[in-house]
Length: 142
Image (cartoon, rainbow, N blue to C red; front, side):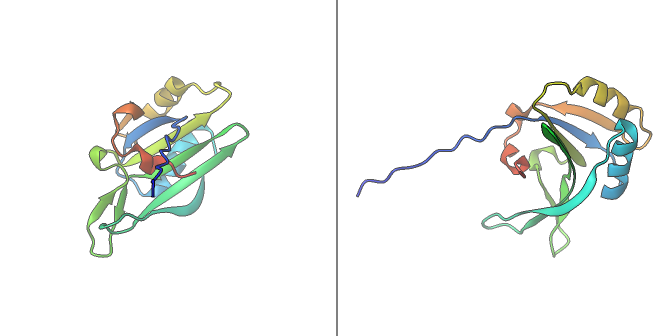
């Protein structure tokens, strides 16, 4: 019997910012809301299940827009044994990721970086290149 394989190439139609900010997730959401004048709201934790690995529970905050979204994801999760697990393992230095999708192309990511860089709570803000991230599929939460 002949087997047919289906290959699905996901679309990554969002911009990605990485943060170094040793804050609790609710405090980080407040800092972003205050800096950008938006209203990120706590959503149900994002759960990832892998074979041969413990389940990841990632804290997330989201703002639904008419033509896109803004989503804050925590990079670190802890297993039942207390071990740290990461949403993007190759970027362990990052504490949070901010996914920005705007299908109207009105979003100015450089202005967001400037505004967030002025916060005393955020140590570093970096625009990340999705093509260089191996485990970028973990960011597809929608």
